[in-house]
Every structure is written in structure tokens, then in C-alpha cells.
Image (cartoon, rainbow over all chains, first blue to last red; front, side, top):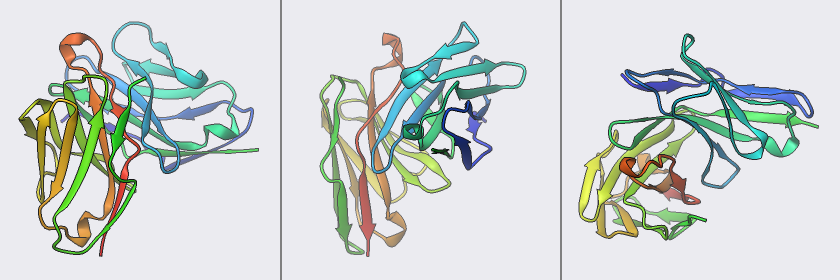
Length: 112
Length: 115
């Protein structure tokens, strides 16, 4: 089955420190992987996508994703966290004619 | 910028009522989606439409129906609302695969409470 998994319900990090939000995938064929962010009481906003090519993909707001085919992972990273990065983060996989499977989400808490 | 709007941010309905959730997008996207979001479960696809009057069931279509009479508008209908349909409902749209764009654009969500 095609799916993604976010193993951490919550990630806590101090402002200024690097952050990583983890996502692993299970797909047949080439993966099409996405990261979205959701601020409180808002819809999801697109951050970045990995389709093919470089293993490091840059996205919005200073975020980047590191794709690792051998570990079937696409972790979201940022070199220096901001308090304003505190939000709910979802990874997703596109499958079956434009449909998306979303992970369960990871809550990121950035403390001042 | 793509704009996806939903008719209500908050809605309270009684058990058994028929509920309509409306979604409009202004970017001429072919694809439109309805999801429900519940804590710990992420987003689950209810229905998907790839063209006017065309629809496909998602993972949890039971108790729901949809209507797409115009390209920009996609409606979610709860035929007889039940308390287990209390949730956040998110609408999204996207261009289709053949156009090379894959990401979805989301509306702000409707938080529905069924009492």
C-alpha cells in the first residue's frame, strides 16, 4: 500500500537550533512527496515538494527537505528554528491520479 | 495567488439535519477535493472531483455526497448529520497531472459540530 508515516506526534526545539520533522514513505515506483504546514485555525499551506532529482529540495520560509531513497525518508529540516515556525506539519504522498495520502501530522513547538 | 474559500468557518448543526458545505476556487483548477481532519488521523479524503459532474469516492465516503455543477465550485453534502461527523472539513484544489503541477491549495476549513 502507498502511504506515509510521521513517527513523532510532537517535536520540541529551542529557537535558533536546527529542526527536523521526520517522514517515511512506502510507495511502489517513484515517490511524489510533499510537505505542508498548518497554523492554528487555518488551512494547509504548501511548503515544498520532492518529485525527482536532487536529494535536497528547498522550499518556502527557509525550509528544506532531505530525501533518502535507501531509508525511504523525506525529512523536513530548517537550520535555525523560529518561534513563528510553531505549527502542525504534514507530509503527503501523491498516488493514483492526483490523490494524496497524508500523514497524521507532527506538532512543532519552538520555545524562545 | 490561488484562493480557495469555504462558505463557513464554524457551523453547528443538529443530528439528522442535511448540511451543505460549499467550496469555491478562483484559479480554474480541474481537481477539487474534500477532506476531514481529525486529531491523530491527519487528513482523510472523502471525495475527489476531476471535472465538472465527475467525482470519485475517497477513503471515507460513507454518509457524504458531493456536487460539482461548475468548475469553480465543489459542494459537500451530509445527507443526515450524525455526531461522528463532527470534524474539521478542508477543501482543496489543484491542477491536473498532465499540466505538471501537483500541489494542492487549501481553503481555511469549516469546523462542523453536530449536536
